[in-house]
Image (tube, rainbow, N blue to C red; front, side, top):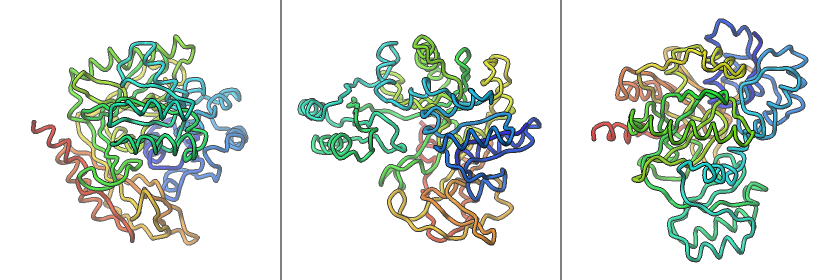
Length: 422
């Protein structure tokens, strides 16, 4: 089967490597892909938001199945356009992708259907938002309503920081139209957990849990990033909590979307916080997380492509979905200076004995060398019988991969190991 994967980062590379294992998949096209993905798929220079040309390519190249991975094309309605041309897709339609596309929508959905989340208020007027902050409990969370490359969330430690965040979003438009509406939210405390799930709108199957590391520097210091590494499973996410989340959050969300006539089909991501009052939803995503995908999919022992077909056909209840009892660790190697300014164009060396490298920000030179071309350059993932083993193997592999200007956190998974000790 000829398959098209839309996107060009480490998440897409992880998806491509996994579906490549399926006997059903004969050819994979990545739009646009990247220099590392080119080793596993045919890269096509069409951007993920160039919807018209993506549809045109799919029709002209007899694409039989499409996987739309990033948030932007999902929210913009790429799945709707492809389905209108008779091309089966893994990913939600635009009316369902709004669960990530609008934080105000998702918060209102949770409030209406009793799904546990932080207390909040939504504002379209700057002065009203600033007035609300005068008597607001600090710290407080300020969120741009729309998509903002994962950067539209500010945890304000002072009233002044909160006021600046609101002005930046609503007045200075640092996130463009995404900041036309802001959500001001109660600050929650507790361990964070990411749970991806397969759902066809009738059945929901959670994947193995994971723990992201967002801060740039060791000890969870420095600026927020797109993610500097992940481990799976997350030790804070016990069997008891998993059952509670399924009953109080996962299935109620799927049912709520159906009741709103926005049935969700694809990967529904739950960003959770395990608060002293129980698990609560911090955010929904309408797609696979990045870099969570890079530890979750290596633990999937079933055929990912077959599962995706079942999701697209509405027959997920018939799918075989098995995850290993092993653990996985992904360490992200980034360009020095990320998430701010950084230099590109350094040659990347990946030895043959390093098994699983997911390339995010790289391009091929004219003579076929792999060069850095982004902030997060690649993720090195290893699987082990225990979390300790997976972490140790991942860092041994990281030491073998090299490029000038590289930096990475040295403590990925350490918080999880401490949790296991307690």
